[in-house]
Length: 172
Length: 172
Image (cartoon, rainbow over all chains, first blue to last red):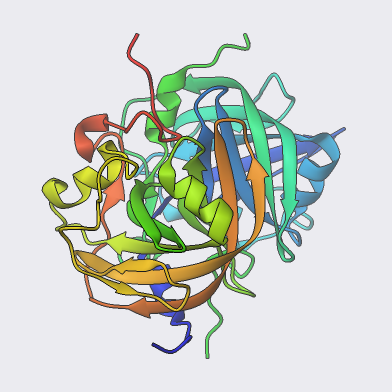
């Protein structure tokens, strides 16, 4: 057995699809994330993985809070695409959509969303290109009944990942 | 806006379904895990969340290696059920199924699996009831073409989680 790594195995891992937001003072931003997971039940905690290059990363590091909206499977690419393929540093992603301000101050994206969670960061792990933020859930609300959008290479987005996603695969 | 936590939001998070194994000296074990995620692309790293009560947790802590098999959507509950609802401390889960020994020494479950990964732990995060193990992928192989089994509350397993899963919800 040889120690080779076939990167196409990563296409077999399954995820949901979420908009994660954060804020700092009067700045706010959001981005598409596939790696939002529940890590403990008691107390309820979630983790998110964010690329260090992303504006949302900078905001979470400073404010130590974030929100996650679970996208509905009917959410059109035209709605969530801009959250994944453009940077909030040079484009106000929140200018054209409706949002509420959460108890953490984070913008809560409620359009095309099944539910929304807010969390306070209790730990973070430096992984080189990315950081794992682990947070205590401080508020969560179900907005709509429905089926969550999933991120599976074989089914959704035709396998495209934004360059800063943990699942990004550079073209050979 | 009140700071209430509606735990049914956690049912909206989506996951894959995996068998994670580990070994230590002549002991080996495996269990069902829904929280296997890729955390970085360069270098390729994955994270798994394991309950501290689980036998596999004990083995990973000692050996610092684990494997993950991605289950095919056709995998019957009768096959993977025992990996989720029984403890390897009092039942040899690997006695009745075929497996290979990986380069890490972990048993690789290849039945009903699309692909398999082996990883060496580089970091671990204590979350109280659970530990996040972060590992460098040292070997990965695609075994079969197919669609991965997913774990969505609304679609799979009728919402049942084993009591030690991060997504377990106690009956009220």
